Image 1 (spheres, rainbow, N blue to C red):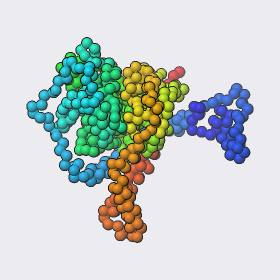
Image 2 (image 1 turned 120 degrees about the vertical axis):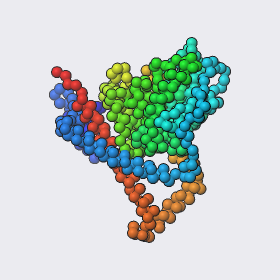
Image 3 (image 1 turned 135 degrees about the vertical axis):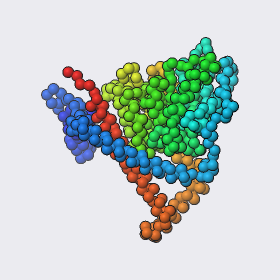
Length: 510
């Protein structure tokens, strides 16, 4: 407990040295006891690798290393964008011919939310018809967003908060906000908004299907490859809500509990908003994404540099078998990135201040609540859960919207909800299986056969015999592999440099 990256401390600090106890176990099958304590007892952890690195590298060396890291990130980002452009050029004709409207209709008028709304309507079954759709122009592009004001919210009974919900890459706003909680990317928005009396806002990413996502600077889709100003788009929605949409319905814009919740790339984008729009958001809830991690894509996310001066309360959840989380290092890496945000952005005393809870079978969370300025962070791991939102609610009784609202709006660590008949069923969703279903077994078998045939064909020829198209494919694959290999190194350097900069900026006491 609390030991850093070393060998000696296991022996001198804890009386359980590697060589002695490992020999006992491996050679003799005996679980060793602790050795006799030295005078004064065992000291525990007294070594810090960060301090060693800090002593080894002066400020000049750290600045030079950071500059080199940024240059490497920019090169990798350029390569990644080139690959993305190649992928976009290879999109199907059906996708490439989808028309993207760039201008609002000249006679467009903002629709009005009724000042009174019936309590007896089954809004959950209405899909997106429960919402009011708005068009807005930003950066010369026609954008869309949806607003749901529950009937419980009136002029006399103001909203307790306001929550933005950002869909994931290739997911639709309908799946995220309008499926009545039945889709795997669903936040069960309408029911949650009514239960907690918050206003729900569901923005729509821009681009041709399925390239619809958010610009996180390193991932994913049309917004990223075309460098769209999604942060500015979000700000424009907020301004329109404050100045026109809600006042017309005689509803006050909430002054607290203004949250952003997102899944996958929508979750990563919520992290971006926590850094760049902390004056407009009080907290973010992220499912299926990690701080400063772009789902296997490489490139610099410069918005993270703005985080030490901003940052909001955060709730972050992810499954131990999340398809993309495994690419980025698995559950341990996810927990480390959550701690990185809590430590470097919120300045929480992570070591020694983590409250560990198991609120539901298969769910374990750690919480920091003693951060400066009343900030707090919660990170939850869902055992065996894949890349989804719905399963946290239906499989574990610890759904994102409810528990994140409880933590971010009220500072309360939620309990599991009542178990359905037969108990919680845990993980039942597989993103890999979903993708296989989309492709179809016949198509998958054909593709597998084609790959095998191509491998056999290539074995009969030397590289000089390959045609130009095959050579290009080979280069692209090699580029992708190099990008993947480089990511691990860059991620480690990012964490190391962030910690060194934090230590260097920490005021000294006398």
